[in-house]
Length: 288
Ligand code: HBI
Ligand code: FE
Image 1 (cartoon, rainbow, N blue to C red):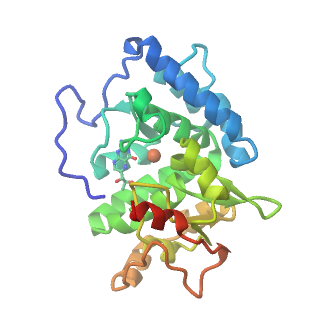
Image 2 (tube, protein in one colour):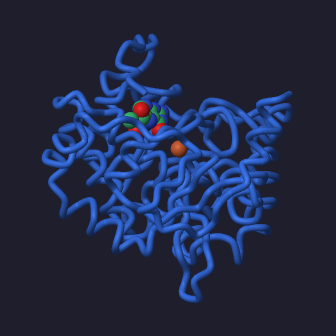
């Protein structure tokens, strides 16, 4: 995802932020948030990492409906020193990394329409805030996200953003975590903000579920247009932070320089396999 070519729309600041414009949301837009929130909050207990549920309370603000970023940031700032700022949509990689490195999470300020209830391509405020913000209230995950931003700035200058963006994709967006009784829980924002994928990622026999392995993961392709064919399982957030923050990615990138990409549905002999997927769902979709 090398999206450094997009032009900055008129009305955005140098760092691509815009006013959230909370007063401009319609009653229907607030109702859309409430509907999505209620549906996910009801289905997630038992499926999501307990750290996510612990953080969900930061979203329960004094006014109902779509969170006001001012109040939300105040809450989050107290918990972990993070803020939420509004942007018009996807922003260039370098700007995105700079915000993360400074503990600012960027969020779209628009919400999906009723026609997009279950699927939309670009991240809206429900994905960005409901999906990402609860874990930003967790001190360990909050540090991981900042470390990712710092790592992104380095990867950008080394020309290896693709490798690093896979780490983001397979952890922050679509990660699973092992729980105390060896079951799996979801924590990735792309899953947590999707009713369908919250079920699919844990219950469906189709996708592979493999143990987290940094170098392996950085070589693995991913898809952005449908449910994942492959999920990586971390042992804990502490372990994820340790493996990333304490690793100098420079030598890792050098080591991977000539390594070929790994196809999305491949299982290697060295993989720790939680689930060997049937890939039935992906095959079915491809044949439609
Ligand atoms: N912009 N608004 C927004 N949200 C993202 O998640 C995002 C982005 N720009 C770049 C980006 N993500 C990724 O390409 C980086 O993780 C590599
Ligand atoms: Fe996201």
